[in-house]
Image 1: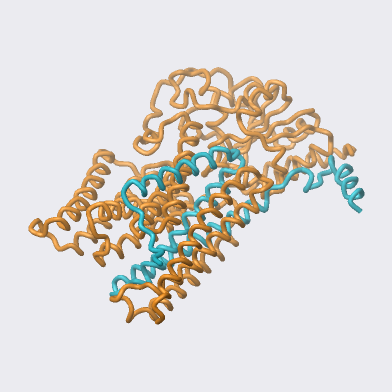
Image 2: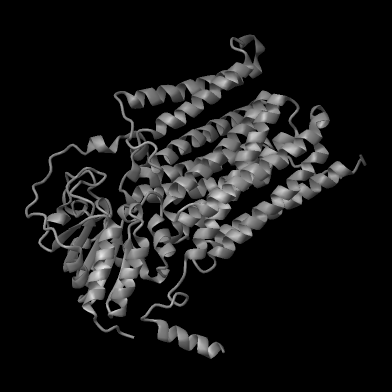
Length: 486
Length: 117
């Protein structure tokens, strides 16, 4: 091969990675507004394409030991790209919008797994030379492996493969021991690399042990966490994968990986903090405490009773109201009711009713899930309002319609100091003149506490599956045969 | 000419610090309504790990390294392709009232179209 080829290849890779880093940042920047966001992901996609294509230039600079395998390796790269990329693309195109949280969890776990696998190649091949490189490789491997197994558990929970949080006595101690064991094996690997006389367990066996511990850690960390805490958990693992990618980027001396990884790491951390804040809990509280168990406390007594109402009557009442605010929750997603909901809303609008949507930051199973579902149904985003923008409008609204949401509208968060959700920002639904709550049954919300809203003078309960209830409401309003406003 | 990149010690920390800050600032401005696409979008961005996987697999010199490297590329490619597919799908759904004529606004939308013609 010509002698200057490796240099040209390096130049090509360097330039492509630089371009990719810029395109990622610019693409993410464009994603900060719904208007420019679709072009943002396209720009970032361009960055990815450039970086992946340029990475084939690595073929010109492979190490002497790998040269005999080069052709096989190139074929393997192509097969892996087509298989992995193709399968994920196909599933990403087909997945239902309501299943988006578990899909993102899976893709995120794949990224973490890839980072851990790169670290494994470096470790087994003895390529991470020097203490700093070795430590960084190990930390990246740990975070990546935790993200892989943790995301898989998160997926299983979101996809209802695992239905109950698994909790047992001394769980925190057990988890801490697993973490310590992982760190100990890692420390041993570093020490053994510095001083061969310390060798007690063969290096490859120790590496296997290290990854096994890290994977177990991800599993036991995620198992006790309940469904409603998933927005925080998904954000954390997103940040973890970003960090792992950034660290492996350092080991491979690839600035594109370092930059992209750290940008995502920081973004994921910010989102994690936002989600935790919206629940009025610290991140540590979400990860390390079992929420359900904390909820055993003295309930303040609630006056009043639950007043059931027929879906049709509630629908007609809203048709005659002048303003309605709708609060969607996870129950709407479970019932796949978003399409029917917008159909109902259009009926109300045709009758001249002013309709708005109020979305709580942690409604659903991942940050912003409700916004996506409403968008899928065709709801224009200028009808969707966030908590701080709409909260003082409830008191001047005729009807607040709560569909499949519970804890995020519980006034105890405002008034009851003994409540476990006290201090959490909530939607002030109880201040509306009339409240309709669409709910599957009389069960409690995720936090396991009674919702005083439901017992309020102004609140009626409409029991049933959200989609079935909405269909009845639509029929009832259509049955009125009222003229539409144009 | 040598274009070998070498990032070590404090230079690496500077890169991490600046990139982290950029991520924090850029994401901090994203409205809550876009949090899901943002999350899957940033999820897509860390799919760049596939490039590291390709490097590791091309430099694999043993069967063990080839197997693990293969999985690195497989998983990384899945991360990137899947992340792009779902983000693109979600973002295409976000529309303003102007683009989705409702009964209330249909008159207004029609007049806009009429002007264009």
